[in-house]
Amino acid sequence: LFTIVDTGITPTIVREVAKYNAGNYEIAIIRDILKTFEFYSLILIIIFFGGFALFSSYITKSWIHYNSLSPFIVSRAFAIMSIVTGLRFFEGFYKSIIIGLERQVLSNKIIIVTATIRNFGALLLITKFSNSIDSFFLWQGVVSVLTLFIFYLKTYKLLPTSDRKNRISFNIIKKTWNFASGMIGVTFISLILTQSDKILRSEEH
Image 1 (cartoon, rainbow, N blue to C red):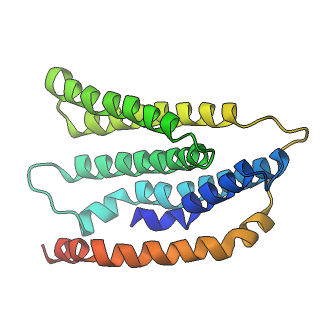
Image 2: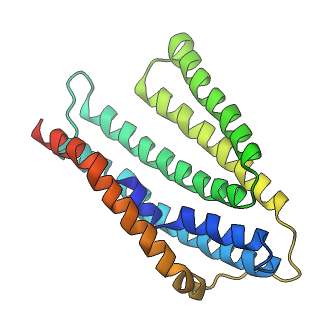
């Protein structure tokens, strides 16, 4: 369900950056577009993922089933998961810019390196140091921050500087809304077809 929060941002960013790459936008315009969607994405992360973290106790008690772990541990793990998911969401924003610039090889290199650190680091952590669920998700959060930082640096290193300050303009969102709303529809239908059975089953138990 978290993919609905994207609201078509990722494919829209890929499309707009590809148009810039093809010479349809000046650097100042594409930087305005990215600044606007960057701000919009940050608001969505704070509202949705921050909300999930804030109400993690209520969500875990009313939906998640657990036996061996205490409600406090499960609630805390869910809160950390929500924050990590928000970081991964923002990471996807910058990754979509790099893909729009046709630098897929660079994007894949970053993903390979950070995924290796994420997975093998987690394995080392839980086998040699701490096997608590908190440690596992905190490690995921640390690597997510690192990955986000790398994608952010690479994104703005690839984009030329502008001769004026970047602006946030909600007219940009209005102009791209038709395309973004179409992508929301596709995502929503895909989620219904692929995830609804899992949600129903979770409620049954």
